[in-house]
Image (cartoon, rainbow, N blue to C red; front, side, top):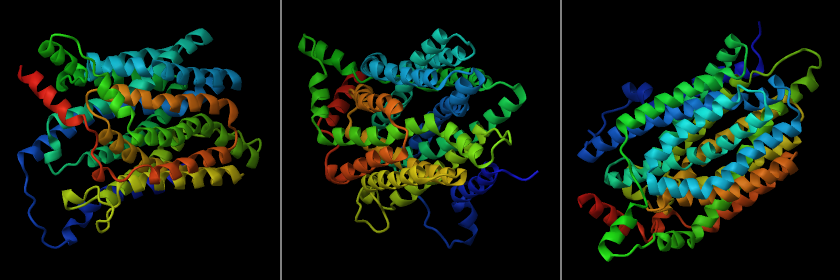
Length: 475
């Protein structure tokens, strides 16, 4: 039987991504003598930290990616819900995310980021189980839990990682924070490719699109056990107790939070995040139906069912290539030049962020003008390529600008405009041209919005935060 469009794409993209990932190994025998790399204690600690974090993070994301390709299809096709009800369920997720952004961020900083990550695993398991029921009330309750999970997933894990990186003083190693974000994105996408193919096989064997959600619960439990075993706790609001014990009265960290929110770069990043991530969330809502309708229009009556897991694996393979492109363009042999856009052959994360937004706008314009299934598919691949560049770029800027004391809270507040935008757009947007204009505005805003991070201090509170945390630990 001839391969369809998506299987062919996967056979091209996965070997290409594998070749790029393994280029150093493949080319090493043909390279000349290389200077022996000096390994320091900080480098050893950085390598151990990277493995400790990624083990948990990739299991958690594996659970999410198992479910992602089939949420829309499960609700629309298997449960036979009408389009409006499906849209209401999606909107419920983002309303819940927006409403819980402040509280989840504050509690994560106050109680602990590891505790918040453990809470994510428990809540995500409940949300996954909810799709096994047909009652709309239970599905809505599950989407409320899903919104809380969405907030936790994109704030607390990154907050724990960056705070732990700073607490261990790993900036003194040869492993920069930008490299960590690049590696996270690369391996996250590789996990998504495997999860997409695995979920497709699970659905074929089990005959139900709800089964990947059940399997995801097992992944969540494994991640929770790994966290309990290998992660230590870190907090932002712990500095409050130090201030209380020294000064005799309670002092809030709100001045530090207010100072961060006054930084214009925070608002530029929030706007860029709203533009790009908002369109990506909307894209996840529209792409399954868009591809199926395009195929049905070209080949009416052939009974073809779009293999959503395979399509998702293609999209994630394109995102891997984008993450590899980020790593390649930001690589510098001299640590002092990591953020210097003028260094030879090195691009700053800021310039890459603006480029990702601009090219993404172009991909949506292509999608808006497209009529064929192939054109839609190629434009979606281009969008995910840009997503692979965007994610580590944005994460690097957030990690560098926002201080550790209220990191999860600030991340949550930055996401509120994003969720409001998605809620409005799901009801009003049906044309890719609108999204392209929004992305274009984001690209224009990022470029002049702030200079590369190396040119400006990440924030004025950070050194004091580190000193306070250190003194608390010593006491």
